[in-house]
Length: 426
Image (cartoon, rainbow, N blue to C red; front, side, top):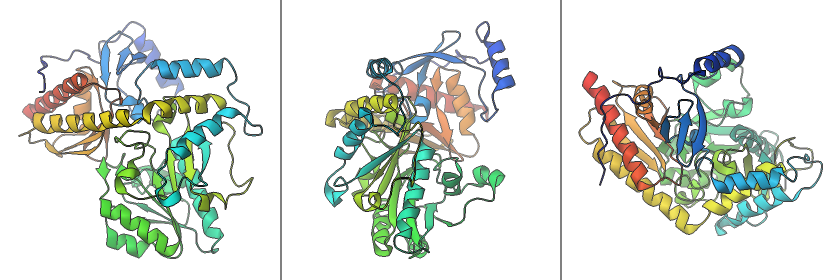
């Protein structure tokens, strides 16, 4: 039952800032590269599923640092892991052995289903971010292709995908908004419509070395792939000896209610990538390769200075050990269903809500073109709820995985009332 919360006035107005906040915002504008449009609020503390601004106002966080803070803020598991490792050693580089990367790699490999024998001989490369993980996947696919033919070097990605902002990952992200300022991009990439089997059959040919796909498109609008589409990609990659690369930067590590979202599709990728939640807020990325790919990579083919450092991998192990439990993952699925049903019920009859979609605790609210998701997010924030946007018309909800049903009720109430408020103004 969705509880009622009153919506009388903005309780968290951006203009009502704490003393000194304006000066800090001025420093932000003066010294930081202005890559993001941000509201005039500064967060300086977090606890559980809440963050606090410099005026000590409390916000329910349904953004989770863009799916990073899956275990919430100031979680003792994360804090203790950081303290424990920081007091020993933080970084020695990959020129020397340290025990933590192998521990996390073992946890990741052993978490894989044996179906398809992916776990047998699988290897892990650690970087520092999602775009680095995807860059590595693209390089590894090209390396694999060259062991077959010098012409087998094409990467296929899909419309509305987002794989990162470094040049290779950006080239795999067919969105003019991101690509046009940085042309010319890398050669050897093709784009295919998402969820279109016939187009995939045409575009994935003998010259393709890798096909990179999100099973739920994050930035593209929270669009889950159809099961038959993903299974066809697996089949087609096998037919032309190409690698199926699944980008799990946002969907991985429990976000959808399974440890890896591709497990919903009954397929085994050749490579998949992780990042956002893996470090609990500490930067880390991972590229997991099947044995047939790993054995084509030689010393010196790739590398990293900071990737796989002692601190990040120690924290990553704590995160995986916490989330990769059947009961924890089952709760995510249950709470995701509860959130989705609550949103559908609360927005029933709204002319501005077209669809509620997603998997687990990765939910999108598709909006009518009469209202922008940014406008809804602004009203929600001024009622003490943080939500973000994606695609052209989608409100994106990524709460911490430790969220409770009571907290979900409050978020649903604020979202539905915010949408109603904007609808009444039309």
